[in-house]
Image (cartoon, rainbow, N blue to C red; front, side, top):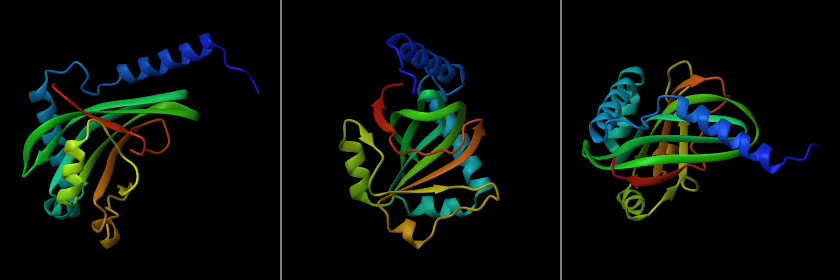
Length: 186
């Protein structure tokens, strides 16, 4: 096993950050208008490609829409994106999502995800937190290539359901586990 030096560690981190920054993920955008435009386009795509998602969204008390999460990694990895929290189809806050990882990984990918808060308590907990990390109590629904949405009554009983879709890139898999969401001012 090869020992990683500080220099190698730093170079790997810089490379991952550079790969992430090179992908169009909303960083340096025109603020709230740009994020809202991307959120609208993401929801239009979700509802047109996966019509059953609209029924699920209508049952949610709020939804966090992250139009583009860009991830890159080579040993060490990271990801970033920005989006909006919508309650009753109105944007109430803006959030960033940041993710870090370590392991056997190489490549870059982008995907969108929508976190549906199925209870008032889950939405309230999310809004009160200074930084919320996805984890326990969250069901993940990855939309497969056939275009079906794998939500069932088990998912509907969860306080938070996350829909992951629109994969593009060379890195296998996509998950929002370990992502930390932080309120931002765009």
